[in-house]
Image (cartoon, rainbow, N blue to C red; front, side, top):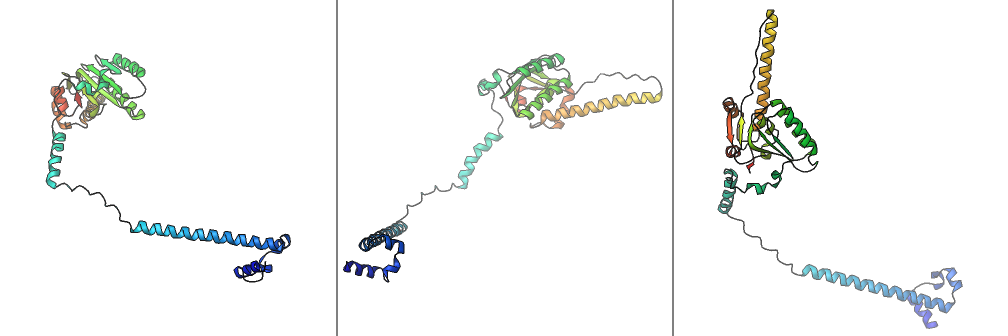
Length: 291
């Protein structure tokens, strides 16, 4: 016991009686108390040594990783010479600048949606066509691309504008894609309706013709009565003509928007009834393709 106490005195300098709380001194006998202190010191020394060893191992591993040679970065391919870039860019430019490919009879397979239009219109553009248009539009699917086909010799331009405006509102409010398919003949007011579709959403079947002309007005002005009333009648007829010209110009601008045709070109050709074959319409960018 004397040797144990001497060892404790060496490890814990000072008076042991003051190092241990009074409650523990009363509860534990002297010999057991010394053994408990020895066990605690042993655990403290063991864990402290293990901690030091672990720190030493971690520092050694970190030093080894820092000194280890790093793998070489993969070699980048050499930059192409300017001549090579020009050789690659030339064919791409030729593709974009070249004329559309001729119709080889297989174009229909590229646009399967056009095989079965949701709204199929034919005949004069009048109130009967508008009623059919509304009925078919209401029965069409509410989601996905909407395809409208038209074959017409012409008709009422205001009804054509009305149907076109409903297509525009449908596209803008629902965000749906709308496609136009002209068949056989799209004349006069039919081109006004076609103008409601963007140029890259228009298609024609093979052999279809477009026909664009100026608005036609037939009006007889009778002058009778006081001179001032005659002046008013003449002014009313003049205002009707002027407003019709403005509406016509709006329609021409919509037809040529996004195409290779200028407003001046269409205004120059329209008075003589401008007939455009499907291939020419595609070349001019007035339609996207022919099926």
